[in-house]
Image (cartoon, rainbow over all chains, first blue to last red; front, side, top):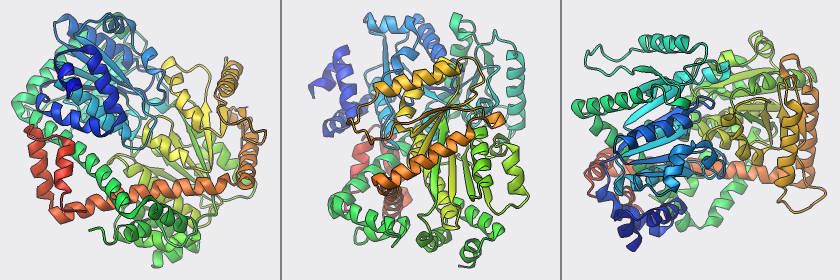
Length: 314
Length: 314
């Protein structure tokens, strides 16, 4: 496939077209992904997640800048939870300018997410795979840390950075507990605001309480770092922590475990999609509507209908 | 099933046990749901959603109180995106007190949501179904309006209330666009804060711009209401708007369309789950691990592996 070859050769416009093809998810997309697969597995994937208002977009922007300044190539995938249009505006300017100016070492993609359940996770995983295949050494995936699909996307990264900020409302703070579980690195952003030290301390305390891992002196304890992403303060330390975590993953064998986890989650999703498509091809779409009618008429419940509809389909 | 009969007879403890059974999702749960299904279809389901910090929990609390004071029975399902523990604290006290004091006309359930993708949507739909079956006239489903699964849960309600608040950050405001599309009623909560009138005006303007529906004078235009949920101001008007919307749904035939949409979404989810379980029963879990190994070794990509794994499974 010419588009794949051109993207692998570093042609930027081919890459953009390839990504659009893949977001549209036709048969050509599947072929392209198969051709790209042998080239994947080299990028370090960093999930950056946190509640709205924590400034994680700005932090992602600064991380990309520091990595780029150190000579690395960086792909950024921004998963915007609602609008196909607002994605761009959320990303900071300096990195975006470089992207637009044609620096081949940086590439930014905003994902629109209105679609079926599961569609977001699939499309994001595919886009990350393409950026990995065409040679970006780092792929930063930014998701809002609320919502099951979004958290799942971040969870399958090699390194998960959870961003907090001081002084958000209770409603936002309550989101923390679930995110802490998946964090490899914790960042208190907007650390020039009052309450940053307390927020950091509270996170350390929560980590102490949550130590239900075996008491292994070699286990990874998520560092709690403070940044002011707006002026870049502390961002170098976050990059350093990501590199430390990467080394830890490699030495401990956890890297392979995370690779397997991501592959398994992706495969399960692909199986669901494929099996339902095949069933409906087999039964016809009318069969689906027939059973929807019967559910609405209260003649049968959803699980009963699923059972009947899959009868004779082993 | 005794538990189902007891719950249908209004026994509160039986209802709580039944819901736990259903959240655990065993074979007994499927039986219970089948037995309950003929009793469903009477409740009016209201999805209440909005970004963190808009005060939607307080609004749900006040809505429940007003409906209860008008003599209706109300079930509340609070979908808390992260923590199994924080759910309780987010709900206001007055309604919860009544619930705890054993008022049989009110029932509150908080859903924990850590689990597999799709698990949240399934469990919430099942819990709503049970509350409907045992006779609650109103079921209020509160979800955080960020995240694909969470928005999908709200979307399948009969009436969708989207909550905004003045003065949230840009990051939060950017979430609006996608939510507006699914709103039947818009509420600017915390309307005693500066900027409430502008927020309401901005929403009206966005609605004007988004009028891509045919210019039907009978079409529903989402009203934009202002509330201060903390002291109950304006909540009566929201209840009135929900009743208006309900009448509109009934007269326009949209009610049936929404029932079908919900049934179809639920059936698709049940099919996915069932088909993958059957496939893995057929092939054995080892087959899955075998293909995960090959994906990780870059011998085959995810979609290729899905194809091979489903070979011979029609």
